[in-house]
Length: 273
Image (cartoon, rainbow, N blue to C red):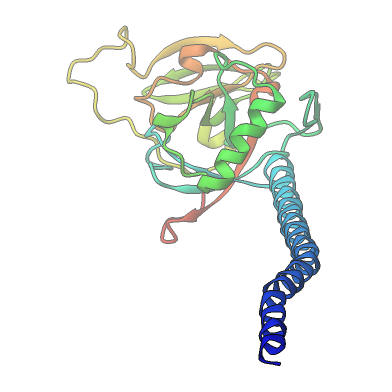
């Protein structure tokens, strides 16, 4: 009897591991598909969330691009060419569609308004190369992420400048003591840039050495010239800076990238004239 009980205990003990292994294998066979399902669902949720954020980002970027192309664009002054009206660090709002409407990809221009005397404008330099829409989109993304505060030293080139329109197509003009005098087409008399524009603004003429005569560059004088069709004469309010039509000549209407609207920083400065 004792021998039988021993054999029974032996069979019972020897059967326990195999049954445990069987249950463990069955449990793993049940759990593994569940884990794979949970892992798949988690990955699918992360992918859907990523795509959702990506769609929102693309939407915000597209809206930003449309607004900056057609409605309003923030601009930071980086040079002294418009002093004392504008100084480095001034934050401005430019209206890109003030004079014309441009298509996004082909950049065809549809003009519906012409610049007027005294307008503060954003102008493309004659030496600037035409950027492709891909390049423009890339710089738009950079400006979006940097809040338009990327230093000019890190940009490929400065292909746009802020200037003031002083003469229109058909006008005759000359400069005397840094002041532009203009004779409108069909008129007999020359008037100053202030009289014709009706604007009140200051210009910077201080800084030339004593004895600097009118035959030298930056002297504040040039002889009479007449503008042809679709030619606009633009100058900076800092008349000691020569990076304007005195250097590169008149510009066409296609060179205008927008009209300056207002200065939003610093707050304590007067409105633009």
